[in-house]
Each structure stands twice: as structure tokens, then as C-alpha cells.
Amino acid sequence: MLERRSAKIRLTRAFQGQAQRLYPFFRQHTYRGPLLPSEVESRVAVSLRDGFLYNRIPKTANSLMTWMLARASADAAGEPAPERPKSYFPTPRRLSSGEAARVEHEIFKFAIVRNPYSRTLSAYLDKIAAGKQQARTFEKWRGAPVQREEPSFGEFCRYLDAVGLRDDVHWVPQTELLCEVPGWFDRIYRQERLGEAAEEIMGRIFGVAPEFPARVGPRPTGASKLIARHYDDETRRIVARLFAADFDALGYAPDLPGAA
Image (cartoon, rainbow, N blue to C red; front, side, top):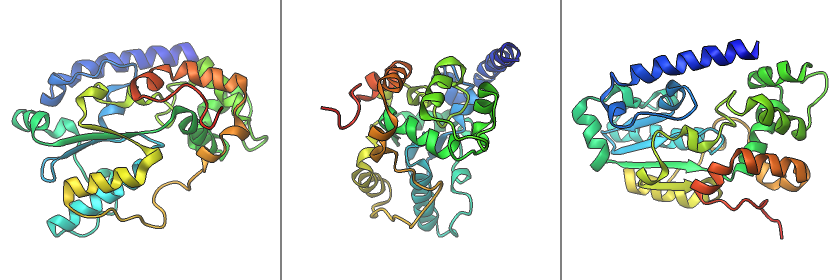
């Protein structure tokens, strides 16, 4: 089963890689990572009207940031508040050759990232422990439904290590979800300083202060405060190894947050 699934993914990736060349933006920025190009492209919001490109990464407050951007963009255009913020902005495949060229020099390009330790734990708490649909591939690997017995974080990390690292974008390495290398972006912000990041982003793009609603997107997991409860030597080693590229490229120390 896993072999057939892997073969199908390889074939789809090759097909999508060829199809990318039909779009001007991707002729300049061909995705060469291990994910399906469509998985990355669908998470890039572009607004030439407002002057930004936002590469959305799951589990880094991307629902909140997208809501802020869509709300401010609609307000600036005199439009009603969008009901589906994540579908409000076009993706890069919609850009013409001239528009793709403008992205290089005229608009603000940014992403928000997160410490891989807390992001991986957040994905486990929100998607696996809660038994959401993203847990299905984990359940097949585990051989038992989550509802019968809540899996440990250690089980989840061993699943990532065995077969599941790229089964879902909520825990896939962040560098693999970027449409370009980190240095191409004007700014790579950190979720750990989200307030400051939102202040700068909204001020730079729209000239307004950020608006923080009571809640947007999934319920917060509080993962950053639960590191010591869930991590042990084994899970730390697994996450440090699987996400080594994130630690290196995004500037996070491989030590557990709060460790002496």
C-alpha cells in the first residue's frame, strides 16, 4: 500500500513539475522540493493591489495573519469582509509575465515561521491527539483508531520518522513549504514574536495597526508552554534530525526551548 502511494506521489509530482512551466511565476521560481508543487503554490497569497506576497505556513498563526490581511485589503478596497480569507487572494499561477516580474522588485515578500519543536507538538495536539481528519494516515500506520486510545507524542514522532513526515502540510518541514529560498523573501518573521511581526506587516502594507480577534482558525494548543511535558530524549532527537534544515535555514537553535 505504501509503495503504491509513493509511486503515485512521484508520478503526480513529475506531472505537476512539468505543468509549472506553463505559469510565468514558476518559470522563474520552479519548486524543486519533495512536496507536490500544488501543495506549495496553494499556500502563497499574492496581492499586487496591496503590494505583498505572503507564503502561508500551517501552524504558524497563518489563519490569523491571513484573516488580518484579507480584512484590511477588503476595507481598503471598500469591499465587504471576505467570508473565506484563505481564498481571497490569488495564488502565483494567476500572474501574467508582467505581474510576475513585479513580484521581484515592487512588492513585500514575507513568511512567518515557528520553532520546529513547538510547531511539531502543536500539530500533534491539534490534529492527532484531537482525532481530526489529518490523523487518518497516522491511524493506518499505527493500526488503531485514535478514539480508542490517545496516542503519545512519542508515537507521533516515530510515525514521522518512519513514513509520515510529508503526509500532511501541518507538520511537513517549513523550508519545504516555501516557494523560494529564505533569502529571497524580504522578511522571515517568527511566530514567537507575532505581535511585533503583525505590527510591522500591517503597518508596512496597509498603514494600520493589527486587529486581533478573539479567535480565528483552530483553537490554540499552547504547545510552546508544553514542551517539557511532551518531549524526552528520543522525541527531541527525532525532531532535531527530521527538521534539521528548518533549524539551520530559519535560525533556530537545535536545543529544546527553555533548556539550560
